[in-house]
Image (cartoon, rainbow, N blue to C red; front, side, top):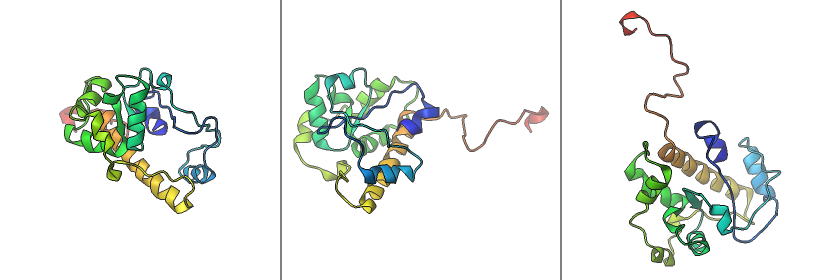
Length: 179
């Protein structure tokens, strides 16, 4: 996410926390998988989630429904901004790209029909499986899934202005007659 937002929304803070491990390096298979994508995880250290880690967060994306429940327990008021990654994409697509609306308002509007009790029911379709201890192929498959979902999140939450076409390159000087 940080890499995707580096030029589009460089002021956005991106963090990573989990439930189990603190100060642990990334799994070797994850380091290799991401290196092939041009991302360096060699210095990554895990952090256990705390309420402080989410202070000021407008959007909290997690991998599993259990994580939504755990974040919601950490601090009152986090639930409206906490989604599994696939769930957020599914819910946000009908709203279309965010315009000038503040991110937190748009995110809360996207999730307005959800209730905390919804997360007591298992729904693996709304989750990203954990590849820990799995094969390199599994890490690659899940990295592809996450990459695709993050691309969609960025397009929805931080869309390029309508007049900006990154494929067009720099604008050519205008000429009389609009040619």
